[in-house]
Image 1 (cartoon, rainbow, N blue to C red):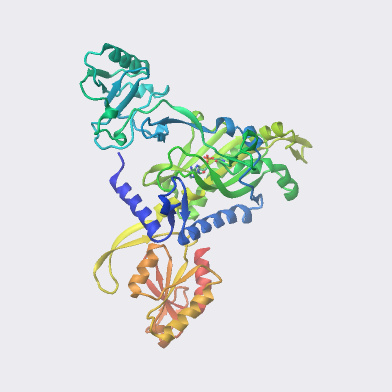
Image 2: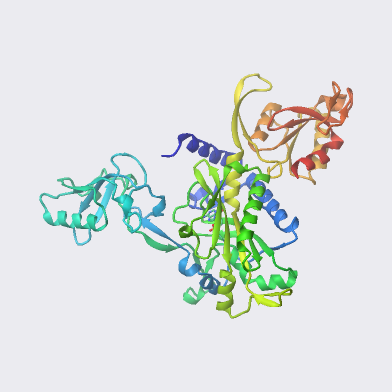
Length: 549
Ligand code: GAP
């Protein structure tokens, strides 16, 4: 059962994202497209700050990783060799009425009443009478979860089953063959459910048995749409880094251990996109393929786990909110020799943000064999050739943006600075380095040309250095509040003390002394504490830059 507070929080975040221009539904005016999202003016800044910081940490602050930008479309042979064409798939169950598909592991088993009628093909429906109005369904009849299915009590109603022993027999066989034990057959004179006007498929149906669906989005290259023209939109950015391993190695002249970093779009035909942007069909990944000497994969897996946890902390996601899951062997991707999932406490549950996998030499080996081109590394020290192992930290951009929004979202009751009335302040407490707008510049009054002139000058002087906003409409309290809601860490107000000199001596935000009467100072307001202090205009650039880096 979902926690109502968590649901409410998520709804507020989604509403804020739309209201303030972080994230919109794709194709909204046409009813949207499930699993696709557009980032608005503030969302794109947030996302860019996140990607830039990752890029800087990987390719600028380290000597052992180089950057890369591969194409989304690749030769189909890549996906055959990597194993994606055959194995990148999920089992799915289908609703016979709506044709919607669900991942079996995401369908809650429920008890209820199954309506069953017999014919050449038996079809069964199930309504959740214990949970009237509950959406989605129900139970599935695959191989694995039989143990828990056995525990579910339910009734099988045989409509029009006035002693119809054939229907009864078939129904009994149907359910017992599928491992259901705790069911009761009830003959009823009711109409078959699909003829009943009361039937609402959203109330639940017995889903189909799980079938395997490939998650790659297929497309055709060129004018003829036949088999030879098939390729896929990449489901991960990783493969282009494997196929170009040799070229990158040659041009960068790196020695092991060394890595290739890439940020880019990936596409998956997810069965059930959900939780806002969390599971999308089009999303971005930030991946490093880190090539290491054979045998050293496990040790690098540990190093990367620590490195990545520290990175999340640096963007404002505390370590305590990240759960490290050691993925059990049975749940690991087929190529993995060991995987950690870094999971975040989203309002809708603890869910994966990033996977860190020890892929062994699986990918290079596959591509070497399938292409016939050598992808080995020549080790100068040992004078031997070998295929390196790979450790891969693979993070989702959109999921991290969502985690940042969830982590930053806060509400508090405050007294309005002007009216003194109590009100709710919504604030996004982004770390300054990822905040979409770093500082907002406000002339206290928009009809005082002296204030406006200085405010424009301050704005123009900061604009080349960082993303700043200028706001002169509404009362100053309202302007502060609007900037709090989008997570702007600093407010800079040009007021009468700027013109006439500071009322009293104080210590500036930079630690410098401001003497009473000193001109060219401004009010600096801090988003999180709402504390205000004075700072000299001349000190603003250095101060702000130090705070955001
Ligand atoms: N190259 C390895 C790989 O792709 P993955 O665990 O399938 O591994 C890595 O994906 C990351 O990509 C995930 O941890 C997640 O952050 C992101 N991701 C995967 N599928 C996603 C989806 N449908 N929507 C949004 N992000 C997704």
